[in-house]
Image 1 (cartoon, rainbow, N blue to C red):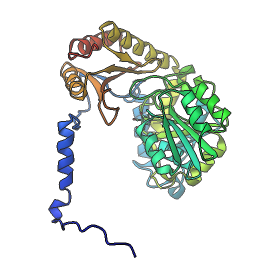
Image 2: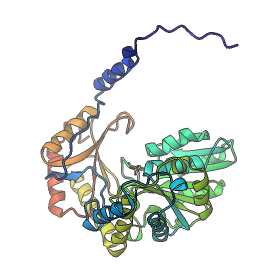
Image 3: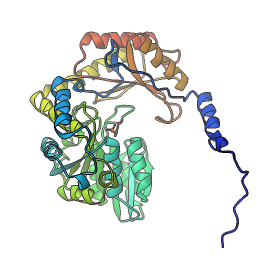
Image 4: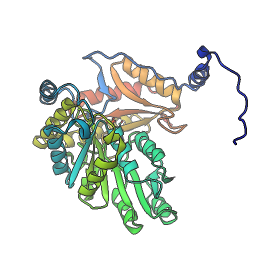
Amino acid sequence: MNAPGPAFPALQPDEVFDWLDAEAARRSEAGLVRRLRARGPSTDELDLAGNDYLGLARDKRVAGAAAAASLRWGAGSTGSRLVTGSTELHAELEHELARFCGTQAALVFSSGFTANLGAVTALSGAESAIVTDKYIHASLIEGCRLSRADIAAVGHADPAAIAHALATRRKQRALVVTDSVFSVDGDVAPLRELSEACRTHGAALLVDDAHGFGVLGDGGRGAVHDAGLAGEPDVVTTITLSKALGAQGGAVLGPRRVIRHLVDTARSFVFDTALAPGSAAAALAALGVLREEPGLAERVLTVAGSLAHGLREAGLQVSGSGGAVVSVRAPGPGEAQAWAGACAEHGIRVGCFRPPSVPDGVSRLRLTARADLAESDVDRAVKVVAELAPPGARG
Ligand SMILES: Cc1ncc(COP(=O)(O)O)c(C=O)c1O
């Protein structure tokens, strides 16, 4: 028999959650309180906080396709595709995504988050080792935690550290996990070198191309395609439909046998209501726009380049190279929050990243480029962000 545990005082029902107040006070002291802000359907603000990189979320072709599909198929999918059936919309979207990105097959999920959870857990397990870049997205981290694999999180963008962790692992089966474009700093992972490390050590490579798809590579085919890795038998890509495509949802792209395995075993696919018909149709329409207008992807990069250049010229500490994400260092979390708030009061909405979204000591403003921004928008944004910079932001 187990020894009796320590005796805890009985609590009244209204005391059970008292510990939440203590946690809230701690967050407040550390400047880490988050608030939901009301948003109307339209605004005069210049939005440099969202991820609508191609400006397609409100495009009539995209939003119209969502509306038409909702009327035809229903507002929701009503269940898992394994239970209530798989619509032609889902099948067509998967076919088109795979064709566009150059992979054998694709599987769509209800979000990028669930795509990452599903891919990481289904492609690993207690008999596996996972080696990750330490700055991977939270959804990948959650996938690692759920996987029961041995996890090694190594230095950022460091293929030698990845190779070392692979060489010293204790499990034969191995998966390397990275973002393509890191969501906070906007830097691009050394995908070819990572692939080489994987091949030397018999590991698979899983790349979250959430911020590369629609922006990088030939016509926006993404960072994995750009690195020449899209059709490779040992490479799996995850994307979100919620950023460049302006819709909602996620997908895993890769070899056919990987996709078949996910249909059978990815719990965030099997036990999750399927991507809504409207979202599938919107993503399909947006993909059509991207195919017809490949210059959209190039335009985002031009806008991002102008933003980064202007902010650097203004003496700010800017990171991000190659993608749509431009990140500006703030002296601390409180300053970052106040800076972002002041920018909003001047009509410029920027992202504010503080712990736990980033490690302590590296709070940031994040500006995201969009293909539909004019040079005058960029100039205005740079002027406001630079003029409102707190002491210490210039390093
Ligand atoms: C790198 C990265 N991966 C995955 C996701 C999750 O995608 P979704 O918002 O579609 O769930 C995000 C979104 O914030 C992201 O930035």
